[in-house]
Structure formats: C-alpha cells, structure tokens
Image (cartoon, rainbow, N blue to C red; front, top):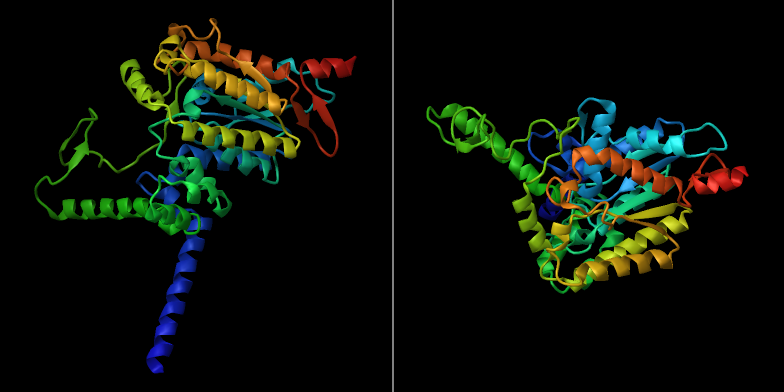
Length: 410
C-alpha cells in the first residue's frame, strides 16, 4: 500500500512538472533566445507576432496582409529596404510601408484613415502555409480587412517537402483539429503519425531536437574549454568549415537575416536554384497537388466566411524556370487556379506575361531582381486598387478602394 501511494505521488509530481515546463515554453518562449536554430527564431513565428503586436498598437486601423512564399517576400522586402533607405530585419520588420505609400496614393477613401499593409509571406511557404497563416490572423481579435495571396506552381508541388506536417506553419500554427488528413495518410508510419500528433499537444516534444541541439552545443563548449587541443570544426571568417579554435559552431546561430537597399536578399545562384526546382517539379505528385489545392480552397472559404475579400496573384516566374516543369504542368496548374478562384468569385491577378517572365527580370530564375522590385510593388498595388477588395473600418462602415471607390464617389 505504501509503495502504491509513493508511486502515485511520483506520477503526480512528474505530471505537475511536465505541465509547468509546457506552460513555461508556451508563454515565456525561452527557445526564441537560444543560440541555436529554433522555430521561434524563424520567419513565420516572428512575422506573425510582429504583425499582431503592431496591429494591436494601431488602434484598429484597417490592414491588408500579403501571403505567399519567397517569391512574394523578395520583391516586397527588397522594395521596402530601398524605400526606407536603410537595412531592415527581414524576420522582424513586417510592415510594408512601400506598399502602403503606393496603395494609399491610389485609393479614394471616404475618410482620411490610411490602410496598413503587412508582409506575412514566408520563404519556402506552400498553399497550406498560406491557410494556416490566414486562419491565425482571421481568427484573431484584430483580423485583416483584405488578403493578397501570391502563389506559384511550387506552392502546390514540391518533392523536397516531405509533407504538410513538416512545414514551419504547421509546426507553429496547426492544432489537433488539423490532424484528420494525417491519420488518413497511408505514406506515414504509425510512429511518425504519433510524433506529429503528440507534437500538437506538447511543445517540449515538438522542440526536442532543438533542445538536444542546444545541450549539444553547451557540451561542445565545455569540452573545448578543458581540452588543450582543437577538437571541433567551426566556420571561420571565410565561412569555410574547418577544425579551428576560433569561429562559430555549425549549429550556432548569431544575428538575423537582413535586407539591404539595392541588394538581393539571400539566394542561391541560378544553377543551384534550377537544380532544386527540377527536383521540386519532377515527378508530379498528384496527391500533394490535390492536398495543397484543398488547403488553398479552405483559405478562400474561411476568408469568405469572415467577410474578408482576397486577391490571388499568380506570381511571375522566368521562362527558364517554367521550362523545368513537366510538359503541360504549368497550363494545368493555371487552369486549376483560375477555376478555384472563379468558384469563390475571387479576383486573380495573373503575372504570367511577356512583361514579367523575361529571364533578365530574375536574380536566380525565380526571385525578382532588386531593381525590378519597386516596379512589381507598384503594379501589384494598382491591381489591389482596381480590385473589389473591401477594407473594413470601425463598426459596420466599409469603404471600397480603387475602381469601387470611384463608383461610390459618383
């Protein structure tokens, strides 16, 4: 009897300790301050927090959010740094003032309240990521008045992505209600399904690899202090990994990615980018495409339910990048995209044109050059101003921008 009572006490104590650690991770976010790469140091986690915090401080001014992958990130961030004329922290400065300047110069408001624009696009994002980000913002206290979602073929077909469960948006924003497709996925083993599912419940479990990496780094530093000789490889001033005393450990993270006026954001060269996209596009994974289009439709449906209008943007891609796709794939993608938008009465801005798909418009075949970024932002804001997007104001008041506003003014 005494042993049973003691065992029960141990279990209760362990459970209380587990709950305390989980609460600490959920509310204090200590992993955001670790010197190793963590999800809480990544673009998605910080962009969501920065948008929410700035919106909260804006006294409920209407705002529009841009969604998409690095194809949207690159031109907006590059144009933003040029507009501000100083470097910006890519993960933490998500206010797109260059878009605001262009948009507010085009709209015809019924009052003088300006529209805020935030960049919620994330490098490597897929259609499912757009859904999770949109849901997080649409279900928040201060939801966006409009959404501009940039998409491209890789957002629906990417063989380099193991599955929706592996993306940063799923890891950060998904909940237990998003596990339905996980259980029906016959390509996942039972232990992998348990891993992903338990990660929706436990922050410690979800981030165990990052915690392990941190303690591994601490161990390396301790060993280095007591050993009189060189033990570990590090990155030196030339960024070459070699055995050396001074330098940065491979798992160590310092600083944050920056965008500089007149310079492209970090990218691979064209040959390596083409190699990656060749693998992303080939072979076609119909199951993934169907799944991603289902998430895309869910995003449009949710926005419609919330009364938030959406502008979908078929992002520009170079001719050389489109040549990497299987024959007929781009045409099928575009047809399916147009059909999805038409079913929901969503306006589509199609940049698949000779004006935008010239190879010399891109730094690496997919990301727009810095010198073309401002022109893209200008063009995109004109699309927004002439689209049927409605920007909600306080109470039941609404104003329409661009063409709709002109009709109201008459």
